[in-house]
Image (cartoon, rainbow, N blue to C red):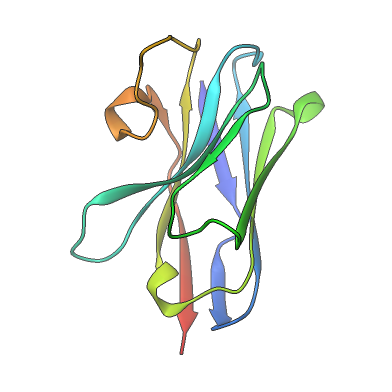
Length: 126
C-alpha cells in the first residue's frame, strides 16, 4: 500500500487549503483513513479520520468546525478541506491508513495505523 499526499503550501491566516491523499495497492473497503500532523518540536497528533465502510468521520477538537474530511471512493482518495487556518495549524500533515476496521481500536492514536504517507507541509503565516 502506498499513500500519496498533496496540496500543502503557504497560506495566510484565515485562508484555506485542500489536502488530498490517494491510496494505491489496495481496494479500500473497511479501512480507516485519516490525517495526523506534526509541528516542529512537537509530537505527532491526530487531525481527522474517516471510516471507509460506515462513512463516519472524527475530528480533533482543535479543528472541528474548520476542517472537513471527505472521500472519493472511486479514486481511493481522501480529502481534507482546511478553512480558517491559523498559525498553529502549521505542521507536516501525514496521510494514514489502517486496513480493516477493528472494534476496540483507538483510531486517535498514531500506532493504530499501518501505513503512512510521506507528509506534506502546511505553513500558515500570521
